Image 1: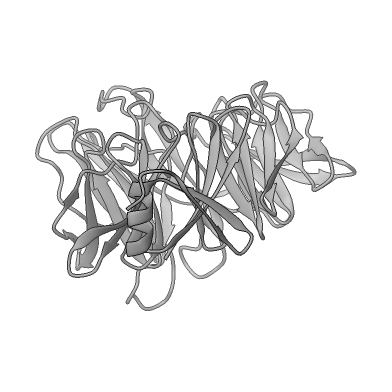
Image 2: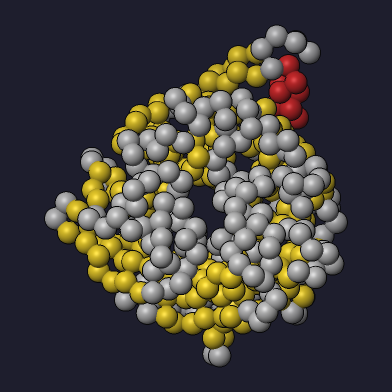
Length: 396
C-alpha cells in the first residue's frame, strides 16, 4: 500500500487520498470533492443541485459545478435555509436577508433573533424575534413586508420546523415557553429550556395546538424534528424531541397530534441520572440518537413498541455535538440503517452501516474539527471544517 498521497479522478470529481484513505476507499468506494473557503462554514443548505454555505464571517457562498462563489456579505451569523429559489438568513443586526438568485432583499425589521433558524415557505418566510414573537414575511416589490406576528414566547434560539401532523399540510412548529429554573444543565448554550411545543398556522401564525410539560420536565432541545415513522399507517409526521428531568437526565420522546391535540406518543429510556443528554437523528422513517455525544458517544436506533421506544445495542466512539453548540444537525442518515457521523474527536467523518450490527465502512479525515451541520444532498454528504475546507463526500 503506498504511503504517498494518491490522486484519482472519477468523472468530474477530483480526489486526493492518503494511503490510509485508499484502504477505506478500496473497501467501500467513495468520491470526495473539497473546496477551500476563506473562513469556516457554520451552516449549509441545499436547493436543487446547488449547495449554499454561510461562514463564520457571515458571508453567503454558493457551490455549483465544483466551484464556490461568494454571493453576499453580512448575510447570517448562524443559520440559513433554502427553498423556492431563495436562501434565507438573519444577520447580526436582526434583519431578514433573502438571496433571490440575483441580489439580496431585506425587510425593515431589526428585531429578529440571529440565533434562531427561520423556515422558508413557498410564498413566505417565518422567523423568530429576540423577544420570542413569530413573524411571517411576504414578498413586496423587491423587499419583504411583515404580514403576520404572534407573541409565541419562542426560544430566542428556536430552530423552527415545518411538519404535517394531521394530514392537512405543513404548519410551523416551535419550542416555546423557556424556563431557567427547572433544569440547570446548559448543554445547548444557556440554562433556559423550553417547556412547551406549539404548532402555528403557517399564514396567520395563530396557535393550532400546544403541549405543555409538567414540572420538572423540560424539552432539552432547540428543534422538534418531523419524521414519518416507517411501518406506521397514515403518513402523518411525528416529532422527535429530547425530554429531560433533573432525576433522569435526557430521554427521546415522540410527539403526535390526535383529536385531543398534541400528546407524548412514546418515550425511550432516560439515563437515570442528571446531566446526561442525547442528540436525535431522523430520516427515512427511522429515529436514531447519539447518546452522551461528549462522553464516548453511543449511536442507537429507536423503534416504537406501543408507548415505549426500544433501543438497539449501542455503537460507541462517535459524536454529533459540542458542549454549548446550537448545531444539532451534525449527523445524518443517508439510507435506512446507514449514517454518517463525526468521530468522538470531531476530526473525522465516519460512514456507519447498521444491519445486524453497526460497522464503519469508510472514513474521511477532515482538515480540522467539524464546523458546520452535516447535509445530505444530491447523493453527497457535505460538511465544513475549522480549516475552511468544505467537503462533499459520496459514500456508497
